[in-house]
Image 1 (cartoon, rainbow, N blue to C red):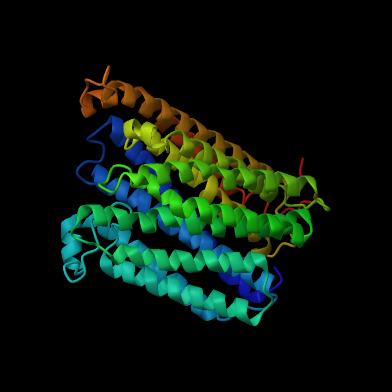
Image 2: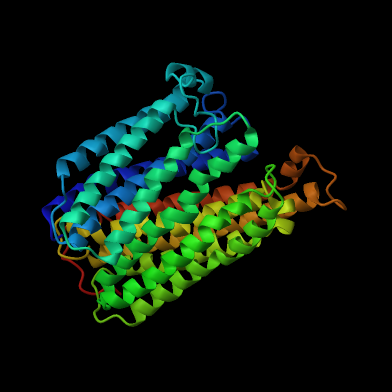
Length: 463
């Protein structure tokens, strides 16, 4: 750690991991409710558990992105953060608002929560992933703008690099596209059309810029490859991301009442969306192969390479599997969508946040570069347990989705009702739950790695 103000990243990373654990616990509850419908009912109904699971995912990733920005921007800009006090103040506002919102979901009926929080004044609730009360959404905007101001002022007063500027562009997009969460027209087609401007253009647009900048930063640090080479790759990757991602929004417009031409635009540009992820994979492995030094933090390098591979598989390959309109006609809303979502979020965003935490946290805790060898070995176990588990979760959900299409959607065979089809694919849900248990063991290893061997000498090499 070169700059004292980078230490504000530490509470963001700790909160991110804490919320991540909560997200996975609710994922396990959801998995059981698929096969045991009355599990924890009526205390935690399925719709509430799903709301908490997805909202925790979004919130903890935002904490991770903010922590990553607070760590890398001062180092890239070669100056202290503009206002560490503002960063810590916004941390507590965001954490308290997030915790109160989750408690609201769990303790108050959703309609009652809407009434309590004055949703009638500016109705924004009741939409998937944007279930937050309007007052929480306003809080998110305040936090995002304060965070953006802090980062922008730091970049403006210091050295400008491609990494920090790409990060800043991604963060501006994150703040701007969230504003569409407040647009809630009466017309359902318009509602879904602009709803995707937050949901899609976050995860398949501006979040990818944040991913690219964090990956570039870590690779610069752990490989020692010339910054100019990495920056050229980053330019190409973000250009392809924006070209394919923006128009690729059309793959969500196929069946919601929009004009037929979206089936062409959506299919063509979505078919190109795996390209930036494939380029990211080549980029990461190229940089590691060209490395000029052996960095002692081997596990951070492993996370960086894993991010590139899993993002390509989850967002690229599994996204492409059902993105063409003639295929999507049969597969949309099935477990194939869930399979893609799980691996894409894990590969692209969960892993890049864990990469950054793995790289930065040893220095935030007073070490020069890396945790002990014992700690890193345990963290490598966590990498493989979580990654293998998510691969099996994806495969089981893909199997469930294919069988669901066969039993329910195809004209020749699709005579079953939704619930009949669900009964016939229950075996896949049980297998998914077992894989989920393996995942949480891996997550436990990740947390434990920061405590195991903490009193041992810093690693210079890791076997």
